[in-house]
Length: 116
Image (tube, rainbow, N blue to C red; front, side, top):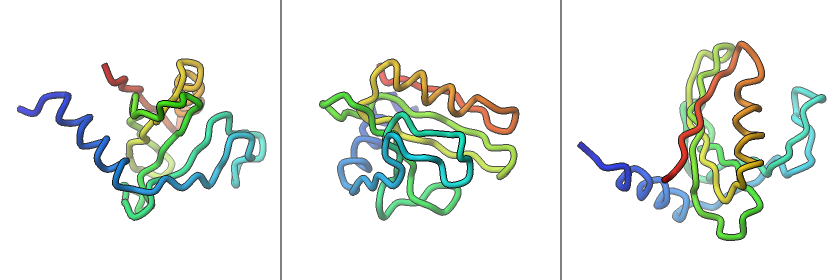
């Protein structure tokens, strides 16, 4: 059985070996839902792939250390898929916003797993 450290080290490695692309900066409007404004930078890791075929999603917060501090595990009932989103340098307020964002509707649910 793997230890939690092994999991987080693997996440650290994929983040450190990838370029972070922020395609929805803080303050941007969601491309499909005009009433949703991003309060935390959102993007993906270049040259990676997730369940939806796009790059692994990342939320990048304002903590200057920019360490991986949590992940969100998401189930999207409309798209009928699941994926993870990596949180990098997120404050507690930013984590709460991200958690609420992924649990607002009956169609998407997520759990926040914090790095201890």
